[in-house]
Picture 1 (cartoon, rainbow, N blue to C red):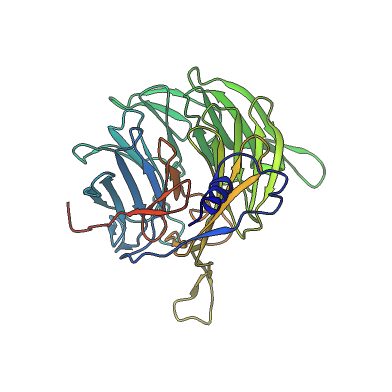
Picture 2 (tube, one colour; picture 1 turned 90 degrees about the horizontal axis):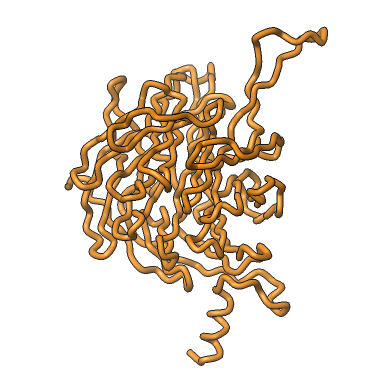
Length: 409
């Protein structure tokens, strides 16, 4: 390849803002499909030191309670060797994975329902060294969101804060269970999307006493050390938000919405800086590079089940699955002018969920799983595509595929 071509490619893929000559979107880089057994990962994570990666795979369950996993689970590998260290069977959808700041613990959130309104949602913490369960929260079936603190050895489960040493509950944040939450990498900020209580007024205009509805419309930022609310807004714009990311320094917020929309917010005053219309279908997942110089926005093409009553069926109900795109798109924007600098397409990018939803409901595991994450040094991207793959950030070049061995260790 000529030197001029190499230089052009480097400019195209850099995080810097485009020059006036680069008015059109960059050419899409195709990341070819690679053979793998089983589903694509629903969620992925890098350890803070970059030595380990983890991936969560959804799967159905056998029988009734107690349920037994059938095909799903969580795997942990060494990055350098690709050697699998652990595989833990699990059923349902693994919507989030996160290592503790010291890398010694791995937490995951699992949601599941067999379709009859019985919720079986949990947050689990495991010891990375020995693989044993350190703590399991399953008492509150509506609690499945969590985040690892970046300033202390603590985990936020819903709105409750626990020590990671003995899992003592030490504090609480906010008033209501959040739909999504995230810590900034510098450990100073915490952001949440959560509902607010709205009075119910009858047809005569009289407000009912001690009765209210919950409406998802609050975006809030907290001091992550003191756990005090710094600012919040109420806006209908966050009603469709199922994914949230904080810039490493806490300066910006990014929210992922349906219709391929991502919104960028100034965390200092919670004003919207930019509305990014990606042109993608469905919900998108935003996530920042570790140096804060890039924001990535990824599509979430998923095959998810829904059921409804149907008297024409022998069982009395019918299950439908949507038909997702096969590919997953990822676009990159620099964080100065929010201009697009690169666009990738994973050929094998769709995934499955196993949460049998009936009616509307608020739990949508297909909208918010963390299927993409940058390595701590920002040089690589871990993706739940073609199973689980590692890709070079600067070029989109395939680096490594992590093989799942479900029979060992």
